[in-house]
Length: 606
Image (cartoon, rainbow, N blue to C red):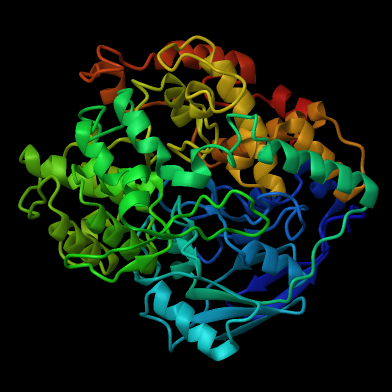
């Protein structure tokens, strides 16, 4: 039992096979070492065993909160879904925003830990600190949107959150995800595929607002006010509140990265979308299709940009948000600049329950295979053919025809076409919207991410685009190994609290630990926070090493290493991964991607 403040001190361990629920307290030592959210979820996975088959009943699927969840802490509306990934075979944590995390805490739980497999489709109904497993046969086969509507009709819209898989998860597409009623997705790594393998359709959480209380109220008040002040500071040009996030959403980056030659286009064959980037940018969205600025729990930024299509075949479509990563993946990376069609594709992915980033890479792999005659009779898909993209996404959702190949993810699809080199993947996961020939830090960040190619483990563009007070040259490799290590540790800690990444544009470790200390009641310094983040990152790498992902597993696709950029801003550049890896491993104390026993002992990683 943990004696720390900020926890409900109640975890639901759910056996889907026997349909039984056991309630346990949060282990005190684990709470102190791994905090919550991402860190605590990974610790449970390590205990469960790293060699488990991701799609077997023995795999664990965790929905986890942090100690700041459900409080007034800025941007604390994040939930971590943690499991062993069927896409990569690595440990994976994938976070979503909205209100589901706060409602789970208000319902009296720190997390839900699922094992086993139900004999028929079920959903978990969570209320008053308890979990019921109920029949989901009426919603099996439905998309996320209709599933949400069904449960809103059944339980009422007030104080309700729904997290569900769609047809993609039911058909066990390797990059299926969990999506909530706000179209906020735990997108990466195939967490929804694991849900489908367990016949778990949805989590339905009913809970009135009941804010988490701090152990030290006066200290909390001061820490919260300081954190809020740095976010709202009008003199801070990097503040997410003052900057483009509030005005244009995440898609404010589209023109910026394209103009600097750092936007992977046509499956990263080039590094800029040229003038076409404007047509799918945040500025274009705001001028032409924006209708609202919804927000998540305890967020003063409101980066989501709800849109409505006014003309054409998708007229009347209203959807939650055209995010940068999604607009890039289904736009520039597929050679498609139609904002109406991009919005339709994102909405499809949200409804079917797909990771939009992986989907854009899957489609672009298919497009390059078509371009170069690699499809081996499996049809074809031309660059920028929006209507055909929409049709193909529907086929992938139910594994129809070529959809059965593409549902396996970008890396497996490329191998099926006989050309693994056209998959822009690391450890089986496809890249997001930053080309490491124009943003060198993303090269080492992708390569060393524990869950596969990812921008959120270490968001180096925050430094390279001068979004934080630690600016670096995007085309310089020196120092990026050290930078990546520090950012990975910071984000591992904040993901365990669980706070939105955008808080880091204003808040630093000092603000994070002040809030953590006030809530939990234990003294904690910035150095303690960094050490905890380092411990969590090494815990994940330990899991991967034990799962068989060892030496040589930190790499990049050859395209980034050997094919120089031809576009302005980064022309002539490749990514110097080997040099950055040397620097990174020295900072980490690792040996070619493996954590030595001495490092584990130093960090008290069990």
